[in-house]
Length: 182
Image (cartoon, rainbow, N blue to C red; front, side):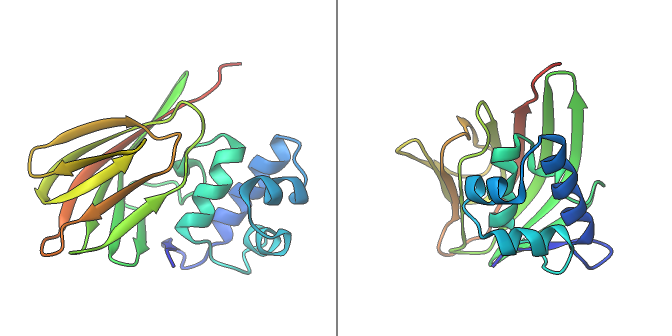
């Protein structure tokens, strides 16, 4: 399971951010849990900091809240997410009227795969491969990746990254999330 790694060593900050966003949107605990496809008890434990969130859970919660992953994470550059065979480091987040742009450095170990659920409507991702080889899958397409390759796709559908069997995949991942104005 993916675990969020925060400097404080706990998911309390993440939980507080989830609760604040849920309440700001007028969603009950039950409603958000149902929309995210997770148990109400699990969501309650996340919000109170009694459970550390997984990356999959954060993506599941971010979509119905209509926020980018960065809105839930420890809000500083350098924050790290660790997943079986994958390390993601937040490089930068730029918040502008109408959109949030997140930039991550991702490293997948040989043969590692990251399957991502659909992000919020209108989210777009780009990958620029720095080293290694692998594939990205989205919308029924499989695109081979190598050093210097760039791919851009709609991320409001399930998608996946996979490193080659014998090589690490290192890439810059840019996620652009439209933010409703007003």
